[in-house]
Amino acid sequence: MQTSDKDKRIFILSEEKPAKAVVRMGVPLIAGMFIMVLYNLVDTYFIGRMHDDYCLAAVNLAYPVMMVMVAVSNMIGAGASSLIARSLGSGDKAKAEHTLTSGMLLTVIDSAVVTLVGLIFLTQIVSGLGAKANTTAYTREYTAVLFIGSIFTMGSYTLGQLLRSEGSVKFSICGMIAGTIVNIVLDPIFIFAFGMGIRGAAIATVLGNAVSAGISLIFYISGKSLLRPSMRYIRPTAEILGEIFWVGVPATLETLLTSAAYIVNNKLAVSYGELTVAAMGVAQKIMSLGNYIYQGFASGTQPIMGYSYGAKDHKRMLSVLRAGLLVTGGTELVVMAVYGIFAPQLIGIFTESQEVISIGSRVLRTLMLILPFVGAVSMSRMSFQAMGKPLYAFVITLVRQLFLYVPLLLLLNNFFGFRGMLFAQPVTELTMMVVSVTMLRSLINREQSISYDPNRI
Image (cartoon, rainbow, N blue to C red):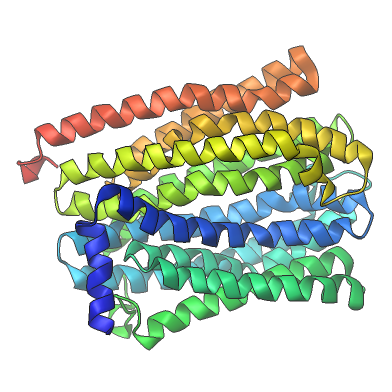
């Protein structure tokens, strides 16, 4: 039975019909990502029940800390996952297992560094996040716990990526589900029953991630996964480290740039009042449900693209890419309609403040305009990473965040105020859809022209 399951995973990566492969890899991952976003939504919901909107603002201000942890995890997860998929595609299972083991070791080391640096510079970090008089104490409480539990958060994220790289999507989802259930159960207990407030919400999140990481690790140890870590591979080779960081470092810089842009956005929002930050935080977390659809399909297609690239099957890559863009675009239009119609009701789930509901609805109805465009951008980035071409992916993010979004954020805010600030992202994503698809088409055309010359790939 185990062999049959493993053969089935390889079949999905190598031979399944493109549209069906995209759905089979993407939908479970989207479900898992929805579960992951519940971590933040559950925290937001129960913190909202405290009837203190400054706590809601603090959770939003602290969100870049989580993004930084994801960024560092992504350095290992994205780099190792790309190499694992390509190694499997070329038939080198030993290299894939060596990469897996190296990725796990590097995650432990990186999380220790994040915890140490975060706790030493906690005061400076909280100030840099934009916390003011009414939110500083809350933000400090929440971020301190996140730093202490970074090994669980980062471990959960990286292990999920590593499992997906071999096609074991369902295994990674099991860990996410279990972790979310733990978080949902513990949130009201820690926040209200134990009277721990916002600190309790952070502890529940960390413990949920711990359960998620532990279950993913059990799948590897039990032998149910296609690949297994091994002590004989505990020492990374220079070649594997080089390939992991070649893809992983640009991926990390992408997330760090996104985090920096998020901080700039929050600092501008604070000038309109701390309740505006709370409203934007709620709207952005609801938006993340829509974001995870395109991210899920893009991440789900990445191992298929990587496997096909390793096998030099460019025709399949193009077919999978087309299927992914069509499925993602159609789904996001439905989500956009739901957000537009039910924005006040969705914001009202998390707060009773009419001011926060009014601002949050306005934010949500503006941000939802990115959904028809941003899927193509994400799919292009993931395709570049799958092909082992991380610099292309990094250029997309560099142009997107540094040369478009942040300047537009500052410019439109200066001329049109809060409304202008909100429209900076839709304008950015529309522009980047054209840029990213043009870059990907150009690269694929070049790769096809040299596909039969392995010395030039």
